[in-house]
Image (spheres, rainbow, N blue to C red):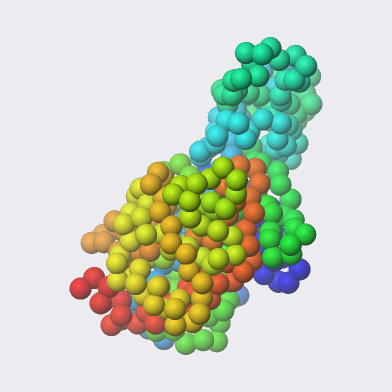
Length: 357
């Protein structure tokens, strides 16, 4: 693996559900400290400031650190874990999956319990078990053992397990948490690429917190950063697998980053959108177009900061997001980094001012 793949492995495998982003934040800090001034807002979003030749415009590159997961709700008297989801889960993908609980006494491995098919009635086979009726088995024999010996208590984070894997097609990477560790990776790589390159602005790579539960870190970090331009770096929703119609999701792995022309929380700034389109064409960077009719991104809060911030969303297509395991294409990642770098190089004070005229 090259250095970028090693970085992606490290940030994808790190734990960090909404409100519990300490581990992933520390990794971003490690990569960014040699290149940036580091600060945090009071909610926990990390702000990595890379100064160019001018203080303004201030370009916010936002990727949310949190991944979907669960927290411990209660421990049954038999020692099983009932849980509450953080972020959007489809019930059907939760069963029979490995997880890790971060307890005060260390990592505790577990599995979401499932009833053997031999014991299911015909009626049960037709139903999707709801999360509220599921449990996690961590090998405990009683509530007392789980609490005292394992150190588990209500509120402990529960994180999916899926080791980073380079697939047989070596351009494809399988891992958990691409939503949105891939966006965090992009802003890390962009800032690394900008080392030694003159850019007429200040770039702020921001790892936001709690996006999956309401875009919360985007609100507080945008207030702290005071951006003139916002570029939200996300995972796109790949629609190139069986069962997904083209009108539902158009992104395809290997066809380039995706420009989000609409989502449920934001309509992009049209001039900034066109700047990305023109820049991609000038540099022979493949670019896809995407619409998300349900759900939103950190741009939903960033673009409403103060008097308003021109924003756009660039996504790296990912298969199977909001499950334990996803797949991205390294070429899409590299092209997203290249595109953002080229746009940043153009965004001087005059160009930023034009975006809102």
